[in-house]
Structures are given as structure tokens and as C-alpha cells.
Length: 313
Ligand SMILES: Nc1ncnc2c1ncn2[C@@H]1O[C@H](COP(=O)(O)OP(=O)(O)O)[C@@H](O)[C@H]1O
Ligand SMILES: [Mg+2]
Image 1 (cartoon, rainbow, N blue to C red):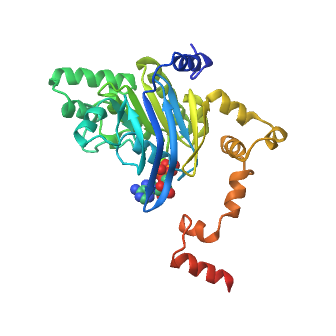
Image 2 (tube, protein in one colour):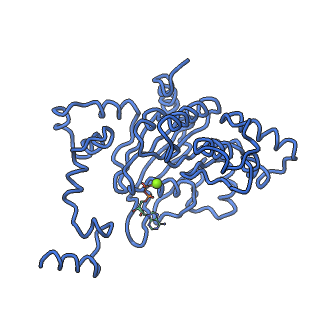
């Protein structure tokens, strides 16, 4: 059996692009601010049918914000996000609901309802968004639970299952409406390494079996390299690079001498991929203004000035 994310799988995604097929998701010049602070500055990203795009970056760099803009749950200040050719930024709630039926989301927490069994959680989207009868819904739920390896645990409550099983249940629910796109936010967060590897394997298997297009946000490199066809690296709201997994793997493997020839962005990506203790990320942190560091961003408010004053004394 082919290993997860083999070159063959990548070749397939590359072929899809070569055919000139349109991207299923297209993000253009996306700008998002919170309280006047720019969190995403002019993001461009295309995701093609059948590929798994992994969005990487350090904590707080804007990954979840980008994902939330992509699914239309928050509105950007500028730019557009086209899903299935429709710009979700300008869609009204009713039209957006129709688009939402075509994608599934697995959030960090799994977000199951604790008062409902695993099966009831998976059935919920079918009850809310379809006219299907009870028997058909029950069959659909069994199929989805079987896909994620949870059929025997259908009648358990979330509190009675492990963290990994909660994630699987969340995934079964995200799959309930047979989505064409799956969005994942840190799917292996909070799981032990083995369970986390099992979830990665499941993502790869599902992508292959169901032919879905996946967008996965993660800061975990093992996971990213296992599941990605292509990768996108975000840094402080800026897109540093979008390329194939092989390209990132090559950058990760570059020796120290070769690395000195690289521009600052490439060096930064390399440090992130390798998890090195030394490099541009560390230098930047050390150089960050103390006030900025304490207050989480460039500020010229009273608190920042009072820190400067304390320092000057
Ligand atoms: N609803 C919000 N209101 C204000 N600031 C936010 C909100 N959501 C995220 N942020 C800020 O935006 C930045 C990016 O956050 P996020 O996208 O969650 O980062 P990541 O997922 O990469 O860790 C952070 O500085 C965060 O504090
Ligand atoms: Mg996040």
C-alpha cells in the first residue's frame, strides 16, 4: 500500500493544476483587521480540487483568522474569498447557508454537544439541513462513523470517549453532508503523538477515499509533512511562501552553509520547519520592543509610554 502523501499523490494534485482546472478555493488580496490592528495583510491563496493544502505558521500569525474568513464566518476588510466560484465575502446569510452545506469543518475542540450521543451529534446536520427520513439518516450516520472507525461507539456520550475519539466524531459530523471541502483547524491539537499520528492518517485516508479537497491549519510539522500536497507559510499575517511539500522538505533539509545564501523569508521558513532554536525568528523576538512584547503589538498608548518611562529611569 502506498504511504501517506507519496509523490504519486502529489503528482496527481500537480496534474490537476496542469490541466488548467479552476481552483475550488481562491483567496485574493485578503486584509483582516481586529480593532484597527492588521492581522492578515493581502493574502492570496488558491486551493485546487482534490488537494490537501496545509497552512502553517507560529501561534498568533493569523491561521485561524484566515480559515474563518475562508468559511465566511468573519468578514475581511478587503479582498475576496471564492468557494465554488462564489465570493463568500459579499454573500448574504441565506446564500452563505447554501454554500456551507458543501463544506465541513473540524474545529480545534471537536465542538460536540455533550448532551447528545456520538451518533446524535453526527445526525444533527442531516436533521437540520436535509429532508431525509429517520431510517436513511441512521444509515448515513453508520456509514460516517464506520469511515472514522467509531461505529461501535455510536451510543456513547462525548464524556465517555477519549480525546482522539472526540476528534473522530467531530470529523464524522463534518462529513455528514458529504462535503466537497473539509476545513481543519489544528486537528491534532491536545492529542498525544500516537493519537495525533492516527488522526493524520485518517485525514489522508479520507481525502483519498472520498476525493475531498482539504485545508488544514496546523503548527505541527510532523503532521504538516504527513498530510500536505502543498503548503502555505504564514508569518505575522503575511504569506511567505506557497509551494509543494517537496519544496518545503528540501528547504528544511538545507545545511547551514547553503542557508546563508537564502533571503530572510526563506531562512525564517527553514527555522520554523526545523524547529531550530537559532535563526531569524529568534533574532526578531530578541529585538522586539519590550513594550510591544508585553502588550502584544506596536502600541503608542499610555501603558506603552509608561513602560518606556520606567525603562528610562
Ligand atoms: N476575535 C478577535 N478579536 C480580536 N483579536 C483577534 C480575534 N481573533 C484573533 N485575534 C488576534 O489575531 C491574531 C491572529 O490570531 P489567530 O488567527 O487566532 O492566530 P493563529 O490561529 O495563527 O494562532 C492574534 O493576535 C489574535 O490575538
Ligand atoms: Mg489558531
